Length: 292
Picture 1 (spheres, one colour):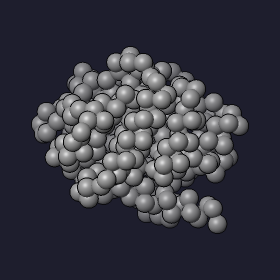
Picture 2 (tube, rainbow, N blue to C red):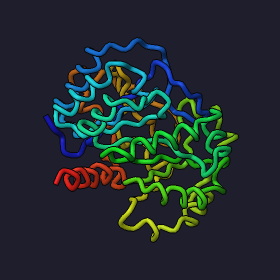
Picture 3 (tube, rainbow, N blue to C red):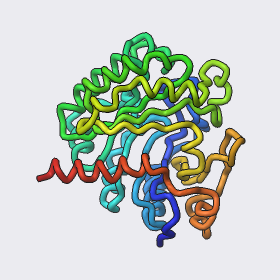
């Protein structure tokens, strides 16, 4: 079942809990219990409705022991599998290495500063920078495609040039840069992190894009470019989208299991923005090259 003008990706957030307490996080954590079977049913429904890709995020997916079963099932359904992780609960085990190499197309990790001080300040977590650097070394020792994610706010905006040099050295397949967006729970920290469009773009211009050619694709995401471009699900299949401008919150759409949910999503969502869509197309080609 497909409707051509629909987004091709959904985000499934694990909203029970998170080991971090990032001030600007948009996820509303609700402590709802998580059932492996229910989550697999959600994924099967997503596949049946014609979506091509799933991004697993929210509270870290690696917190849950049955993640390997869920991810393996997702891949068996032919979906593009993208996991975003804060890496704290990502153990450097043989089992995780096999899972990532065989069933994950793209893994995203945060890097919000060129130094320990800046990154840890952004993540409100002392020692997180060191965790990320160590986990990146482990992941890079395996055949796994990496996407680094950077939130840019007034706190770290002056660090973009130095951060770009660090990213260039790490050579991920993609670097996604996001302007701070005070949406949902993040509105409470707007006064500290707010960054006007002009300031954000001034910071972006400090990056030497030419140095990244044929190494890393840089994806620049302004706040408003992300509004209503994909449905957001929690692990129980409840569907949300960003409210229409200028409301900075989320609109409940229904359950992914509801009759007519696809039509509702189509009415309220636009197609995925081009720069985000390319991350899945490009990375498919990268994986093909690896397999030759």
